[in-house]
Image 1 (cartoon, rainbow, N blue to C red):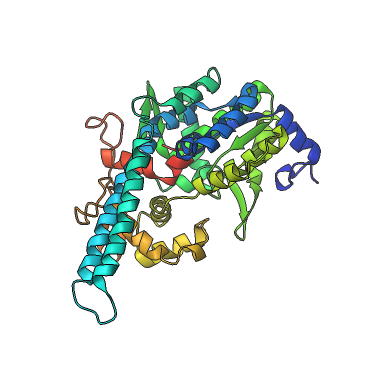
Image 2: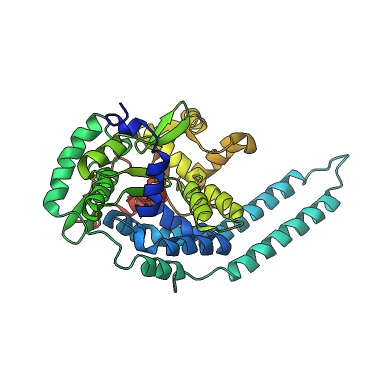
Length: 408
């Protein structure tokens, strides 16, 4: 029975050994982009591990393209953080000053304000020093240089135009029947595209393009495949009652049927944990924990995922319900998480005040307590914008969970 229903069984000990000793390690785009968020120690250990597997690492063309498309957005996101936090500190200080403008019989407001200002000043000084020490990756991106070195000659070719057209037809049937991967992206705008040379890459089929390229690599290399991804959606993972069992059985079955090869998947923290053990690297606990934390979606990404799943528009109550049901966070550690969602919606919406708006216009306030993805229904106009998307849509793409997983 196991041989017939291979996808429903975890690999045997012998098969896991084969995966790790002979397999091709395929990295998803979010694994590359997450490198920009790691501390120096964690970054160095990741590069050390990848160097040890250098002869067997590989990235599909789709991943490489997605990385190049989203790299600057990730760098910008990190450099903006200093000023964003400073701005929030200033706003909070002003709110406290207003609250203390009236006399209170039990509060010595001058003494209290002196302590608060001192604490805030120390925090601002810390942020200023941290920013001064932050590398200018816009001028010299040492992380990309290392990635370029590691993956020199290890990037796949794009699918030819005719194969893409066949894939789009196949994808329409697959998505209709919920065949993984990629069907969770079925609500994306069907006309939104990216262009690379003479190729037209439809966003809705980004995951499927990636998957077909991975299968092609398995056929060409005659090696089993280990796919490392931070994507947590159910069109990649077999999830039962909130518990992740492993890769979708359909994916492991399709790989065996088409390439005759084993296929398995790891999230980044699990991959780095096992790799460190196999390579005899000690004191990797902090790296594993940091890798796991970086893999948690930001509130912005949580909201985008929720709105995408809710047809692009929803009430706050619906957004709360979706996040509560799908987040990988322990919400018990975030007692004010609903307030964080409301604040994030305003921070990324030009409908909010100039003081709150951060400049990346992702959300639209439809009415009181009701929000939508900005320009979600906008159709492409290639004559006006050669990338196939409006600047606002490109900003939403770069900020989306799919982008952090690795998508366009």
